Image (cartoon, rainbow, N blue to C red; front, top):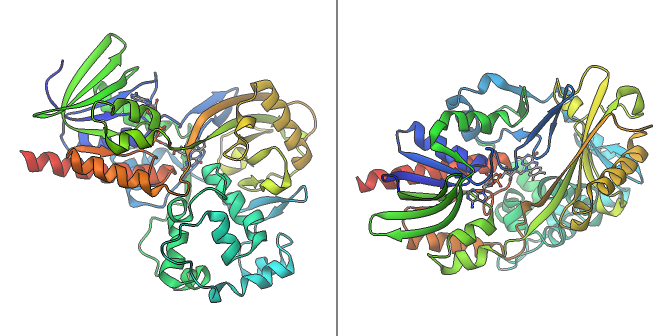
Length: 455
Ligand SMILES: Cc1cc2nc3c(=O)[nH]c(=O)nc-3n(C[C@H](O)[C@H](O)[C@H](O)COP(=O)(O)OP(=O)(O)OC[C@H]3O[C@@H](n4cnc5c(N)ncnc54)[C@H](O)[C@@H]3O)c2cc1C
C-alpha cells in the first residue's frame, strides 16, 4: 500500500493520459493505471518497411482549444504535421464509383451524388417543423424527415459510419451528433442554423497527426508521467473509505492497492462496471450494457503503379446501400507526408461496424482477402499488396444509441453520490480524440478544484 495520492486515473488511453498529465503538471500526486503493456488505448501506430500506418484513429480534428494546450504543455507542438491540402477532397461511393463530395453551393448543384429531386427536396428543409422536444429520434429518422432519404444514404449515413462505425437507425441524433441536433432545437432548421449560427472563437489547425504517427502523443504523455504511469496494472475495484477512495489493482508484481482523494474513470465500460462493483448503484449496473461497434482496420501498401485511381484526397466513405464490404478507406500517403516510401502508396480501410459486426470478427485472412477485393474494384488495383496487416477491435467505438441519456444521468448521480469520483473517457460525451481530450481536461480541472477545496 503506497501513501495517499491526490488522484488515481483508471485507464491509460488518451483520456486517462490527458487527465493524469494535466493534473501532474499542476502539482498533484497522480498515478495512471493502464491494464495493457503500452499507453494510448485505441491509438496505435504501426511502422514497417518505410510505411507508417495507424491501426486505430488516423487524424485529430483540431476543434477544441484544449487540444493545442495539451500539445503545447507536453512540448510536442513541433512534432505535429498538418494534413496536406489534398485532404480537402473526399469521396463517396455511388454506383460503384468514387464521386467527389461537393465543396460549395455550385458544386452541390452540379454533383451527381444526389438526384434533382433530392436537391429540390432540400429547399423545403427550412420550412419543416422541429420534432416535439420530448421525442428522441434516431439519426436516420431525423435526416429522412429534414433532408430526405438520399441525404441519409449518400451523406449522413456514410459520415456516421466514418465517426461511429454506427447504425444511423439506432444512433440518437441528440446524443451522437449534438451539434446537428442543436441546430434544429435552436434555429428550427439545419440550413437556417448553419447560416445564422454565430461562429465562436475556434482553433485554426484543421486535421493533424505527428511525424511518427499519432502514437507520439500518448508515448510523450506517458514519458512525462514517468513513474506515475503504471502499465500492466489493471484496476480491479474501487471502494470508498472515510478519507477518499481505495483502488485495488493487479500489477506486474501482483496485487496492489492505492489510496486517493479522487478517482478518474477513463476505461472502457465493461472494465468500469466491474471495478465499480463495491460501490454499486445505477451507473455500475447500466454502463455494462453500453453498446460498442466492432471494427477491423485493414492496412495495405501497394506500388503506385498498381493503383489506377489518383488517390488525390482524404479517402472515401462507402454507403451501406452500395454493399461493398468496406465502411470506407483512407489514403494516408496522400493525407500526410512520410506515410509510404517513395513510389508506394498506403491505404487504410475499415470493415464491420454496428451494422455488420460479423465482418470485423472473421478470421484475419478472410478480412484481408475481402477488403483487397473490394478495393480492387473501387480503386482499380492490380496484383497483391506489398505489405498488409489486419487489426481487430471487437469493442472499437461506443454507440450513443436512443436512450443514451440514461448513462449520462447515471454518471451524474454517481458523481453526486461519491464526490471526488469522476467519469471520463469516450463513454458519454463524444468519441473523437478531440472530444476525449476536451472532456478529460474538463474532468482534470474539476478534480483539481475538488482537491483544493478539501485542503
Ligand atoms: C479503429 C478506430 C478508428 C478511430 N478513428 C478515429 C479518428 O480518426 N479520429 C478520432 O478523433 N477518433 C477516432 N477513433 C475514436 C478514438 O480513437 C477513441 O474514442 C479514443 O481514442 C478513446 O480514448 P479513451 O482514452 O477514452 O479510451 P481507450 O483508448 O479505449 O483507452 C482506455 C484504456 O483503458 C485501459 N483499460 C481497460 N481496462 C482497464 C483496467 N481494468 N484498468 C486499467 N486500465 C484499463 C485500456 O487498455 C485502454 O488503454 C477511432 C477509434 C477506433 C477504434
